[in-house]
Length: 174
Image (tube, rainbow, N blue to C red; front, side):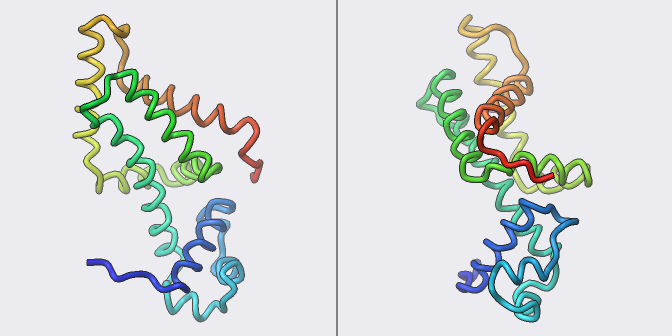
């Protein structure tokens, strides 16, 4: 069972999130995080030994939130169109809450290609993909949608969600 975080730890994580989302792992400094959290660097190191530990906590949280959006495909009471609409709605809400998250994940994955696959090992990706593919195939068989690959639907849908929100909301930070 996880122990509840203290107010200071919550402040540090929120500060680190802002710094990492703006500067990435390489650009962030522990002093920046301490300043953002309004604490001294010694206190930051007391709670979190190093920058990598904080980065992992934040990236794990963000990937978990992204993965949670995919759970809509497992809702048996919705048909394909309803699931797609709900997926788009939840994806856009996620992007609204973390506007630079897609850019952050892409940049970090580009610097470290194994980063995201290693993080995804903790999630039942195969089960979600299988469920999603079965849903698509059932609607293809019914003639409701044209034959399409699951990866194409996911990539195109997520890209459109990011694009629709990013035109006016994602600040240029690079």
